[in-house]
Amino acid sequence: MKVADLMSKDLVTVPLSATVGDAIVTLADAHVSGLPVVDHKGYLVGVLSTTDLLNSLAERGREGDIVPLLDETSVSDIMTPRPKTVSPGSDVHEAAQQMLYLGIHRLFVESNGELVGVVSQTDVVQAFATGKL
Image (cartoon, rainbow, N blue to C red):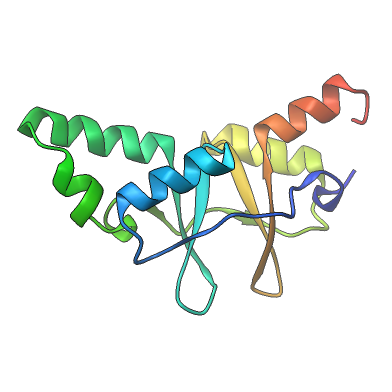
């Protein structure tokens, strides 16, 4: 089975310039645990995950004020740069191994440099559990 058979194509992205507060709203509205971060041309430049948010909130929480984090901090300041990608034609087993070995929950899918989808650990487990894999 290929990544294209499992990937989610309806991606919600967040711009590099968005505030952390805006990104949290986007994550909640989309019911996802990570968002691709795109530049002004729509190119994938990072990923903002709940782990990134929790780490930043924990750091700011010690300082006593998270309002600047939410309202004044850009996504670019806390995102993970250079997210791992895979092509739509990649084998699902290889993608699953890559997620396992890298300790990540999702791989963004690019075709000719264009962001076209995302495949997550949940997608792989669901395919396995339903007998598709």
